[in-house]
Image (cartoon, rainbow, N blue to C red):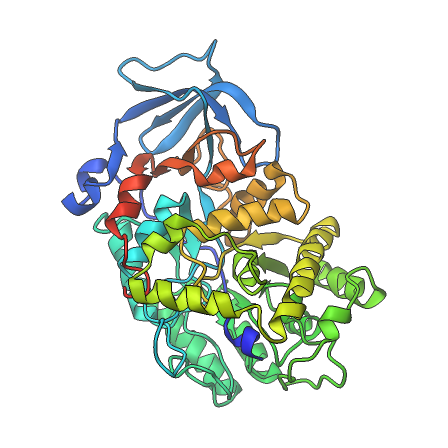
Length: 477
């Protein structure tokens, strides 16, 4: 169960947007990161990748006015409004802001005998925004009051960061591996917990590994009564059973589904075995599970970056990721990474990772709604923003085209959150949440890492400045 316990999950629901911020409303410490703040801005000669999955459109002009997209059209014929600031973006692309659907505000502590996950309220908001992530779902919280306060500060222009959909504390049963999680006593405790945190302002919930079917059912019923969705990283409950109970989303995909373990009993989290390594994704059993999820309209959140770190020598050793860490966090990560080739993980995780890629492609082919996230947990190799970009690259490795992968990481998340009328794709009338990228990620998906400006509510933030401002903080705060 070690690998399962190194991962985490959450919930989701529609949340109201703050009004688009005028630059004058930003605090001076936030304004320091603003690169573009004109009332009317024309992005000219830019490649538009609109997030719908449609082909990229070259040599376009996109006009931003009062925080929203005003027009998009061919640069040769587009009329640029009088007084607009003009940016020549020849050689650049714009995509919708990424919507991170498994994006925590915490990170594993590099030292200590107990698994602990300190809140990263300083570094993570900046890194998410710098990576082009303009909206997140926290998908599991260990400091829910902090997350709610971060949302208030960001919405109020006092902190640079993404729009936050805050998930309540983990709905965990008896057997939590970290003391940061409350263990539910029974179904009534689950109901009370959901009701309490809805009153505090959370907009989603996440069931965790040891929750019982009765507790999950009570939580789902209470959340749905308020129009709020529940997701889960489950172990005691298989995917079929969770779908029947009414869960809205399942985190991580096939590699955490225990229903294929021999002798699996409801409400029990079984010991790890090689059942999933032996499971054929195209088998009748696996395909029936996929069809059942689709029939119940249960989404699946992909978190490929965190799984990649368990495959020996697979995850890229990126300088920008290492530079973001404290020296202690960097040493802890590199030490664990060097040891990951020892033991059972060395043989099982390459197989499991490949199966997860196959499962996600099969799920989408069957009509399932796939969401994208990074999950900055594991043993520390996945970091806010950078990991969200890596998720899109890995979706392409799974067999999706770059345009499909961008659609999953933008439009699908907005659809699940009930926000597709505002964000998730680029179209006139939508909020100007978009990412300016040097290069063409529709042809070369690795260009998605070349973010230069991130627009949120029509205000353009300097990605490099945001990253530099939190250099060496990951692992601390």
